Image (cartoon, rainbow, N blue to C red; front, side, top):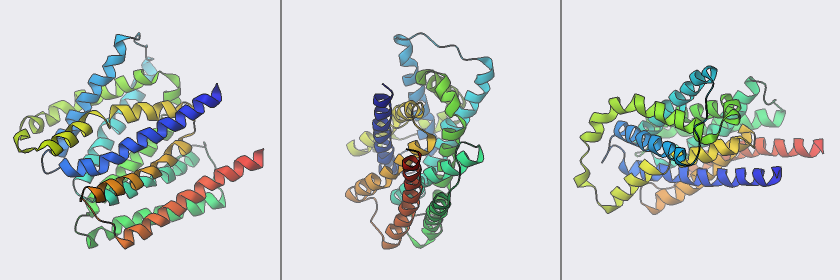
Length: 300
């Protein structure tokens, strides 16, 4: 049974990272041109809050202990507000390819935080992989000024979003294990929506939907409905059965898919220096991943 649940967790991680990879080109297509980042954040959180309430139609509401409510509110601030705002404003000011590659720093940040809280330990290979991967991410951020479609502010915001994701995966793993996934997400998204809707209501109302063609309408509806609730449902499910570091490794699917989509849609083009920096990041995460495999073999 444990094996089947582990396999299900890995399949959930693959699916949620495919969905998140689609975010980069589709958000880039709509944000700042047809809809403001503030409107997108507020509207997507409202949709996620509605979706999070649907499970109450077939399941009984789970009681959340008073001591955990403040922690869940903290998770709502992190994942619902800070991460979404950084992601939306970041993607409106940078290249989707750069954004997707910078997002792959999440596994390295998860390792760093896991060591800090005593969940993991450093080895020479992990330290080497961490330094190499972070060097690649920093190089992409610093190269922003040399490319027309990329911006250093946007890239820094994407990196901040990755930091927030890593913090959530490490610090809230015990909370995820304690409650039903649907309960946790209901509290997170309803709290986030209540905070954001008054702030973003004006931007939503003043959005000019008439200038959107069918392609833009599809992209807008997709990013409003799909990427917020569904992938986080899958991510939180996976965290019940696999370590945060393993969960975060799947982020490396994102740039591959995002690059293919971005180039196919004409939103970006592949640049030699970015390919080089991406390879540096991938080698770094490969070293970290291999260190776990080597450790697992040694234990056997």
